[in-house]
Image 1: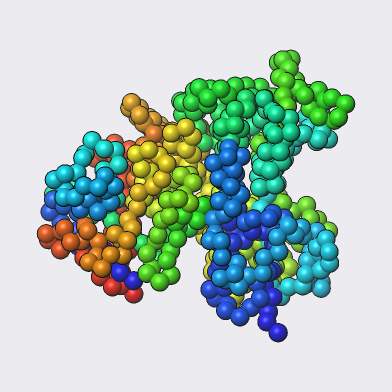
Image 2 (image 1 turned 90 degrees about the horizontal axis):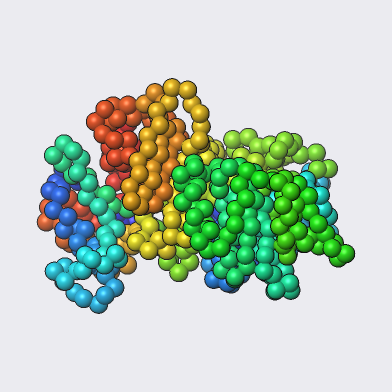
Length: 413
Length: 149
């Protein structure tokens, strides 16, 4: 009988792994299961909420992906537990045995410990298609006019865009003193803040929610701020961080810390059980999740591969025509570091350099030709000689131009 | 697969390749580089010739990498490595304009378009039989489309 490869989760890591497993193994049975109805890209959920795309159009694989790769796709299937001893997954309607298992269940949003937030019926996250659907339904049912969003990171701003597209007014509370605090500095944050405010958003920066008011239907109708002010709202969205989705594994005996513990080959503590993506707690960005999925797939198929490209303090954003790239901690206080800033009419740049090595960079405006920054930062490339000749922002891949025998570029260091 | 093989020592920096790329991807219906409208923001090349500061030139052309950083970071499925041609294809209808690919190409090749709603990237002139326009336009054979393993 054909070996059974089971993948729990159909996000970036799960899909990348499934594709790769089929590449290595033509005749194994591949079973994928996911709580969602469609495999979708969560980075585009705001486009669904805003009415720009349908649920089908959020897919990041071809419509015939499962058919073409001969993958059994168990949609709306929730994994409830893992039985390592008997090599099976406990489902709502029985058990699914496996020969090899990949856990790629991603992460879940957290709800801050504010009075009523965890018990009220109208507090949502914005992570899965099902979350976007709930918000969509809530907007329609309530004819919502005003939504309170906790957190102004990429997810908080995404959901704000989606709601404002539909004419819903948003108030966004952010504990930090600026918007998108992990990716911006004050200047870059201001530029985004102004664009969002021009669309009607209100930001409460450096202000937390301290309490809330519920009606007799257990719905939050107002959020009380630490300043004492009350903001009325039709519902609340929590976008203040996520954590690995490991709750369902708590009785499995699988070694876990914040996420599932894995080695460099994405192996967990249980035989033939692998994990990849956000569920490992190693990163929360798309490219790394896909990489982990591919590495896990290779090892599951007996092809040794190691997850080495672990750098994950990187992101891009694109809101209201303003693009930004951030690599590293742009607000890091590093002793003895040089900070370079350059502003022009339509571009703002900031770099942190310590002992000739780039530690962080932010480019807001035109982000063309910026792919080399991640390479230089994650590999701690010494640019001190170049800095004697040119402005730090004039460093390009051209300064390291090299090619191999197959005419692929490489870094000449 | 076919790749545009580069010999930087032959490049004179004439930028005929850039013009040919603009011409090949123009959407205004005109023909001939002399009719290219440089006032249009969409008149942009997907390749670039960079001055190396030492009297030479560095042709920057998408490698359609064996391990494509751009496609490996694509969250919409717009960028894909075609298993038949080996080329990294781009479907702008799928693109979510998140620009993760811009960040994840170590060589800085794909870039946002002027409107910020999609990216510009080499499409090998849609596999047309005569080969990519840039290659045909190069007077020095500094770039050649060759079969590589």
